Length: 209
Image (cartoon, rainbow, N blue to C red; front, side, top):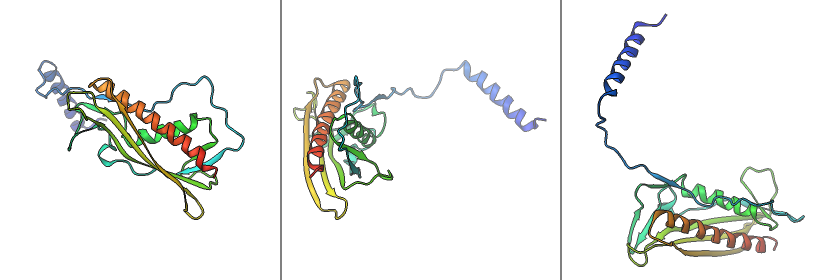
């Protein structure tokens, strides 16, 4: 048996819905937010051949520029910073960066593979990647096409005594082809792929030492 209060509530909802169906909405109409991504894996004909001496490297992730770590696209014009309106990444930029780094190492033919925290695998080397800059810079004024700056500080250490193996800053400046969101997103993607390509190569070279 349905309680009367439920019947009354259901009836009230039905009446309200019927009344609203013939009315014009008074709620403000907002422009839909456009979602973008970067670092999506490219489709390969076959997975890269792994050498027999595969080396596991523990990846402890790292810091990410706070102003651009969310799903907002950061722009910098002189000493003024702003976010691109009505535009978002599909996930926080820090999350997308970490996913892209994983893919970059997976698709590389080198001997290094990343080992995440909690994975039951012994490692002798740790890698930390701190993203210092991840932003679109309007260096020629706010009407010209911006340049995307991606700067990553990489640190490689021995697991046993935390002694330093190597560290390096990787920086790529990638100009957008136009001052449009799609062109700017494309520059982000190209800059990130170049930086990660350099990081992967550097890691493979130094991890074995």
